[in-house]
Length: 398
Image 1 (cartoon, rainbow, N blue to C red):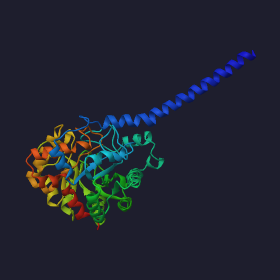
Image 2 (image 1 turned 90 degrees about the vertical axis):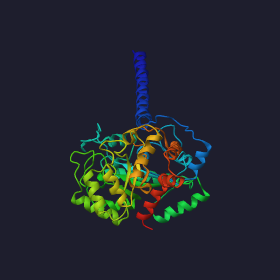
Image 3 (image 1 turned 180 degrees about the horizontal axis):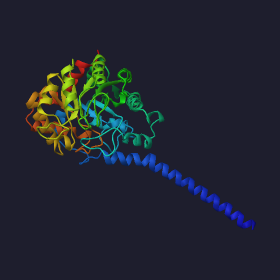
Image 4 (image 1 turned 180 degrees about the vertical axis):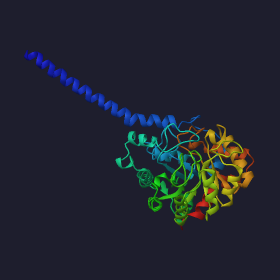
């Protein structure tokens, strides 16, 4: 009898260890492996690197001052200081691509079962992502805290980059970046953008909070209507509300660059009518080459250009109705022919849960495609970054 009890105790002890090991494996799979799998699946590339261009084209590309208006890389469980085999952007790849300035845009809520139109705000896939990526509990029920948390990730990248990456918040920061890159061509900078004013949580004073946290671009809409105004993907797709007009005014007082990507046609019309500074559409296509409701009409393109702003052409298939650099360059050509080369730029939507033809190291392919479209070297320089630089110099505080 005593021997039987001893064997039971031993067996129970073994089962206890098996349970512990099972729990540990489950936690590892959920909190370590699953975020990487989701990242790799949602931010896939059609053609993996390396991307070949001629030595002459590589020289042209490396002579440019390159900027991109939209990447959602802060959303993912990825150390951006290290090169990764998944996703589209990290610091080593930005440096390889000769990117001087990358806009890092912060996402705070995405509806489940996302549609091109007719979405509401009742579901929240970012909460699921926050849980499996072990974001702080403060972010679970607060969209503002999610924005502030992602902003801290970019600030930490700058602090830990040994001077290879910095944040841009003022005109002086831009000028220092331009000068320092002459001696340090590997230097890359980021600017923070907020994608969707739902993170303001219905309070105009939160414009001041996001400005204090380092945000310098404010997207008025994402995938659903908010208290501020309509989304082109929402249910009502209305114009600015009274709160929305307050947010626009306060944002321009703070010298935040307004981003009209995802905004309803009514919001676009109202903002450009009341704007006192250039506005942008950070990532989009144009209906002239890819006709769907997500993309800008000719009249909207002209309205953005009339403010002195720029249209950032996206790289994904819904934006350009193609899967290569040639389709991107064709959308850029259409926009430049319509309103002039000063009003078009890059707006990739890297790491935006969309499949891309290439990661950021494929940007030389766009340089080559722009040359094939007949753009001059000066025009290519404007498209690849100088137009964005001009707008930021006009909007940011000294």
